[in-house]
Length: 572
Image (cartoon, rainbow, N blue to C red; front, top):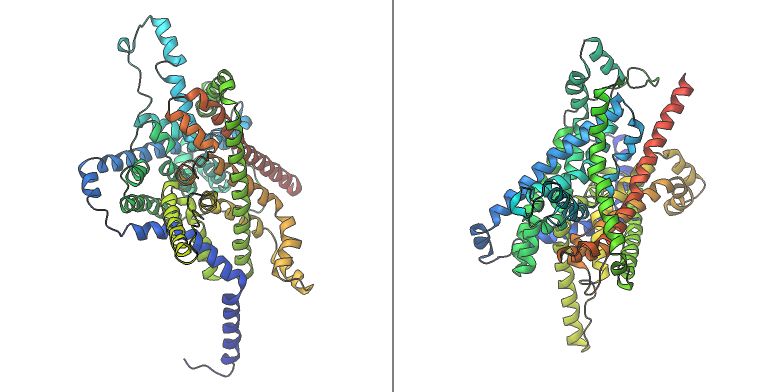
């Protein structure tokens, strides 16, 4: 088709606009930041192409299939527990009425504050041979030694599955509950009219509608499972993460470690693909009326109410109350040995690192999200997706992808300065706090980006137009108008990233400078030496800090419920 005279004038401005978008500092900056976030993954893939010698032959003949089978079994077991616990509790607190339902809405979030390795340490002290449980059993039944009775092995694959499931199910609970709250009242009423009871309605209506959200929650839990190192190392469950550390550091094979990291990335790609497939052909049942209507709930009485309370209470008891009580007792008993100047220094290191990383992640997220708001388009959409990739990458894999390029840069600069000036630059990036901060930002940028984008989407585009009319450019508009309006989302982003950085173990353990400890590495070192009492105070501190985003989520749930009630009063 040939262009007409009326077509040509339209083509020129469109190309000019396209070039102005490409030439924009916001766009170029966002693309550059996204490429920096992608660098660790690209580095892992690059180094995986090198020859690893006979490392893989040795691994295949000895432990590789054990790594793979343990990883798959761990992910399957944790996936089953988080699905069963998260979906059942979300359904009960959303669709049923029983004593304590309002309280369980936020209590079920509390296990999210406990890292998996911390709950593993707590239950090991609680259930091991010298712990209070077996001690009481021996006293009551008169048993003298472990040969007199059978007790399940705590440090095992089964133990890792149970304890990780106890603290990861809130991912599914949150998303499933949100999906159940958004389901169509009309469809539920039709199901009731057709004679379907609560169970059949759940199976045929609610569960299919909530499937995409549930799959996302399970995928997040499994990514955290794949990222875990503290639990599997303490329980001697040799997964791909433990294998990566052993091959890279124990055997001294960078290429072998990178190749195991690439294998782990395949697991991540499969999880992301499953999550995207779950949203394909999704059917959304919308309300037939704009008028708000309360979800039809089922009253539970008698043994049914007791069963619902037990289903909701057991995860809270096992996933939060018992571990906190165990850690509290140990922290009290070993307080004098734990509360030392070194502990205070470790706590300060954790607080400062996490706070700086949270601010950096927020700044990068603001830049990328606002750039996408200004120009949009596929390029910035791709940059946003690439920048969010780090959250899906295990911390040990990030450590490989960060430390090796940084070390290569340091060596190149040092060699150049030695030849030209005759001095040594030492370590500039690798083995420094900068490497840890970079890993934190890459790993948790997706969390901050999601919060910032969600807040910016609530601001009308007319505000940007009005600011331009008043003569404000993009930067001053962001500072003067947008930031005050999204300060709530910014605070939430900083808080959640801060707590995630406090809990992060694999990347911190592998990238931290010499003689530099955080609370996470401090707890890991003591627990590895079987000194659980000395590790209790640090573990309890991490849990206490982890309660911040949980309380924030609880507040958001309460505010959401109040806004719904307010909407109902206005419509009535």
